[in-house]
Length: 108
Ligand SMILES: CC(C)(COP(=O)(O)OP(=O)(O)OC[C@H]1O[C@@H](n2cnc3c(N)ncnc32)[C@H](O)[C@@H]1OP(=O)(O)O)[C@@H](O)C(=O)NCCC(=O)NCCS
Image 1 (cartoon, rainbow, N blue to C red):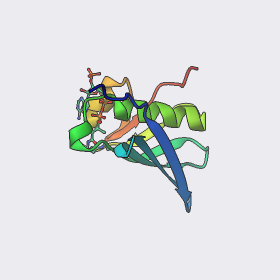
Image 2 (spheres, rainbow, N blue to C red):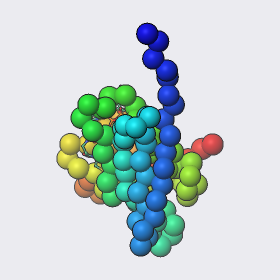
Image 3 (cartoon, protein in one colour):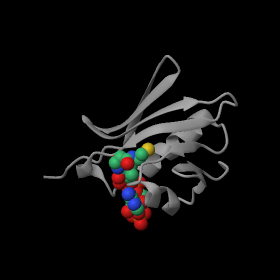
Image 4 (cartoon, rainbow, N blue to C red):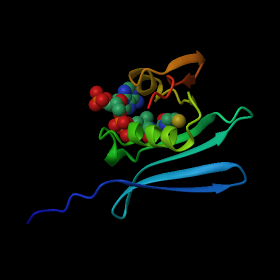
């Protein structure tokens, strides 16, 4: 049987200044994030999570890019966990203070 290839879709909700974004493939949520906009309207990622069974497929990278495209606010900041520092370094983010990372300027 040939399985249909379903492209990921994203869905955003906002409540009291916090934005919740979920990336899904069919009925499966493959990555979620929560972010806010600071006084300068820069994105600050508070939480980013890929369920264990979906890790290593590029979903967190794609979700961060989707947030950057959606908000168009230049570099974004993230509050990392100790687990994720290697992930942000791999993406080329700069550690501006312990566990706080900043992306490069969004260029397209
Ligand atoms: C960190 C996390 C979000 C990464 O999710 P993911 O969907 O697996 O990430 P991606 O598939 O987009 O990974 C992109 C690259 O980073 C690497 N990578 C992923 N997690 C990594 C980690 N914790 N340390 C080092 N490298 C990591 C991947 O191997 C991949 O490398 P490749 O391009 O050579 O294949 C996920 O591990 C997670 O949910 N962790 C628990 C929650 C957490 O700590 N969140 C961050 C706090 S905001």
